[in-house]
Length: 359
Image 1: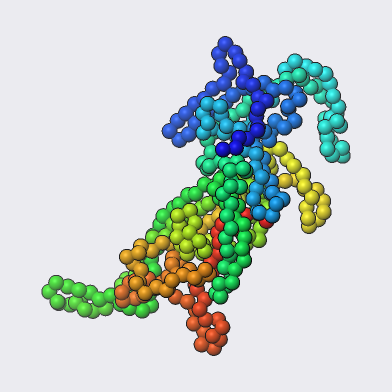
Image 2 (image 1 turned 180 degrees about the horizontal axis):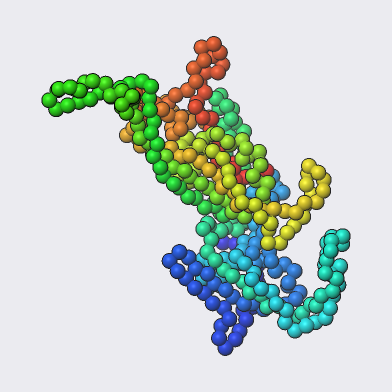
């Protein structure tokens, strides 16, 4: 495994009683450490400790990440905050203009610099797996994106960014499906009324199926904000997964929308906006992809479901129950006036791997 070359210039502060501490409870834990750093290494301190991210320029859609520093002993804790930077041993005075990239802002003119600095870092657990760029690049794969009913496709590189900085949560719930066809009837032991009389919809009868669905959310942390309106994300709305994804069978995940939390990075970078040509501050976000998951038990499936093609997925959201036998069948469009519109599934499919690809 490749090692992140960050935080190599930090030295823990020594005292008769350790200034560093840690605490743990049933729902997590945290630790704090005090370090000493030379002034010469102060410039890259923030990104070295807290990490950074930006889009790679190699056309693969991957991200370039500097991972946050891990605690040297409790290695499941990662740096989440720098709570204090304090100068030690004054070394002189300097002018703010020496360090200001934008001389037009109202900056502090005069300040004191020190030979060394005491840095206090807080460490906390993360709800996702961390992986460095070198290890992730070894996991890239080539996939096909089938985009029409004729199974025409384009190849694309899947950087597999969903293997890191991604957390998954699921909320199961039940729904009721009713059918306009078919009917239940009452059945009594004696055969007396209301035996064989229809249990109509008016009195709460009719064909009703209770189904189990899940609200599945994939949250991708610490990513460039432009992923929210990226074409790879917009193209997936209202479609089902074309491939098995995180153990969810193809066709079972219907992409409903996104949620996002936007924030500035720990160390703000500026880049050129391609639309306006002006410099803008980098923004990051935690983006959540929201899916409706529908997986029918195989005992409830008809034995006469056609095989899936690359584009038409014959499972999950593209199946409907048939009244009478209460088995799920594949359904597709039928247009007598325009046969060219025949054969389309209820939901088109899309490689959800592309959601985690920033082109």
